[in-house]
Image (cartoon, rainbow, N blue to C red):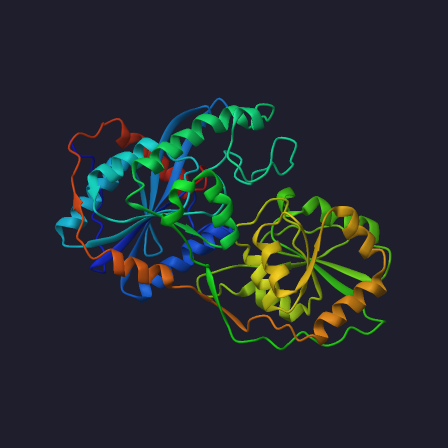
Length: 439
């Protein structure tokens, strides 16, 4: 028996299906920004964007999944919460309405039941599959590749010899193998999308069999040259140092706090935090950032308007892309980072737009001498090493979808759906409406 589902239609004849662990309409992460950009780009090409996000409940410290359902967003409009079977039947309806599924995008495997993905691909034939590398969750449960001592454990995949003393190993072993089996089951149908060359290299250490199926598509395109925010800093002007993003330890928040504590009384530095929270921080100024579909460059604008001089991007893991990196470059900020910060390190070394330190001590030693820091920034500004004037959405993924998704998929429907799902879905929709459950 079929569970009732409200009538849902697509306004376009073609569409892509994407899956992520959170509702990108409410998200503040880099992945949410990517999905928002994708929706806009596909819609601009008269292609509908259908997104599923996970609504779940775990028990016993995430050892048991009580349930896993899917929030549905179409072209930026929330539609409700459904079972995977209902979603497949919706795709079946689209197929009968001669809607062409161009692409299936897996943006993350966090929280999702892998058996649902098997069921989806078993019922939807032909449509190409893209797997996006926003982090390293396909390598280790702890997606930053930091061990339980909060140290970077290297680019290679998990193993007993390497990871047996890590608290994440037991949880990661089964989950990673489950994901790995799924990827290899559909290796001939999957293209892996890396947002930078460095993450492609790291990921292929664990998945070398995907080398010919892994490509790099940057999230953004750099347009023009920004010639502002390059005036010399006079000796009597404080140096404005920025921390970009939420206060997460793997982003270097603890290092930032150490800097503020040690140098707040020098009367040489101004410490400014740029993020989307309402929080205020002791001895720091705050600039609130609010992304929206109509203004995805709000961070760049805030950095330029503030006249930022210096930015700390002290990621403790190999960042796969880092929007804040390109936003800092777009404000002609001088960037301080460390040796293991992934694409941040790679880009700074190529562009000569900052300093890559070997450790925190080297960073602190430099900041002890504000006059030296000011001179370093002024020399960088004299070099006219311009950042981009604009950062535009990179629509290469749309072109690939249009090129590869020329064949109409064959979608099988599902007849038997368990009736107990219906009252639970009704409750979940109410709870989600009032922000009582995550998704």
